[in-house]
Image 1 (cartoon, rainbow, N blue to C red):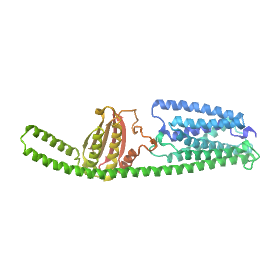
Image 2: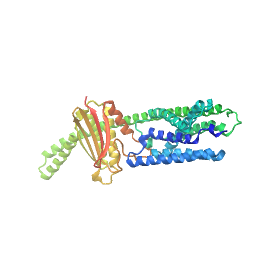
Image 3: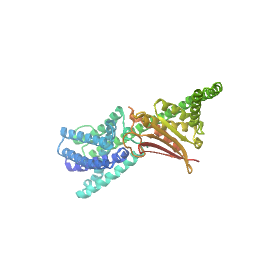
Image 4: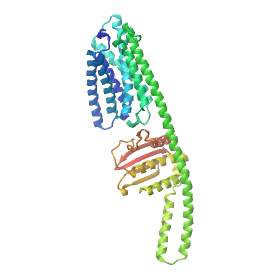
Amino acid sequence: MDRILDIPKLYTAIAEWLSCVTAILIYRRCVGKRPKDFVMLFAGLIVLFIVILRIQLFCQEHNGIPWLLAMTAAVFVIVLSMKLALRLKWSGALYVGARVFIWAELAAALEWQVFYFYTFGVGRFVEAPLSMAFAIAFYLAVYAVFFFVESHELPQELEPGKVTASRPQILFAWVITLLLFALSNLSYLLRNTPFSGTEITDIFYIRTLSDIVGVVAAQMFHLQKRDMERREENAAFRNVLRNQYIQFQESKDNIELINRKYHDLKHQLQVLRETTDDSLRAEYIDEIQEGIEKYEAENKTGNSVLDTVLTSKQSRCIKESVTMTVVADGALLKRLSVMDICTVFGNAIDNAIEHEIKVEDVEKRLIHVTVSQRNSFVCILVENYYEGEAIPDGSFPKTTKKNAAYHGFGLKSIKHTVEKYGGYVNTGVLDDWFRLEIIIPKE
């Protein structure tokens, strides 16, 4: 078949490159925030276009097995570019790469069919610059639609570790992609099959419709995948809330028992004081009573729920050799329900403790919890000494847990809870201290 009737390989290269750029814009929150990251990304995109163009020009001169190998190389380059640019694991790169490739196939096929219909199909001739301008404008319009649709389906908290897919999901995505790619190009390789076209327009229709079916099928599968991920996230949220509430109930019962024991102990010490004249023994008794009173004072914030949570976390801090200080006006939290107080403070302090127990110097294992009023807002500040890589504001330290894909539900539940009250959450590192700041309108 005359080469002029096929998509110019320069156009195909542009379509594939713009598809990669669109994916990077969609998943831009996975791109590093340092200036060096943007410089490397820009340089990488230039190299990517050169490599894709070279591969497509090779495809223009070869058929059969060499063409198939070259297209396989193009697919690999797309997947590798997604992994490097977006800092994805191979599972995420393979899944995103399948979608990028099928987008490029549809954009290139649809543009060339429309262009052919209004030019060669009616005997007109368009100069190369105008043809190129039309192709780029058409691609930008198609990818703008892809960007809008795909961005709408992204989770709010997007990190490289969250963009992933299971093996069956990756397999299904690539089966759809490769099957429709094979069907759309069958007429160019084999003429005499039940699924091949004979006329030029038939071949174009088969290719374009196959790619449309592929994109629609891939999108429907993607929506189903996102729906399943949302259900898993909601289940994880409910599990966090349930565990926090159960922990609160258990801690409340234990602390009531401890308070009764301390109350009895004070009376016993008073009797012991009255029945002895030994000065050393009296001094020792004073120290015990002072310690008891100090313990009671530290857990009297004016909010019984907060007292219970803080005392429970204080017990864990003692076991882990972590020093936690609290300056809190619990009366400011009367807007928050029991469950929400448990969620916010339980998760915030648990995250702080998880980091502090990794600090080798025990004297630096420090946590500060503050609840105060600023104008008409309640400010909750949980700080802990931080050792690790610099992290941008609004981010959270990387997890050391094995299942990184489900890391961050504690912070997510905090944000979800705070947003119910019209508040917001901010995180960052300042002078070796990780700060989790929560602002909630008082009324």
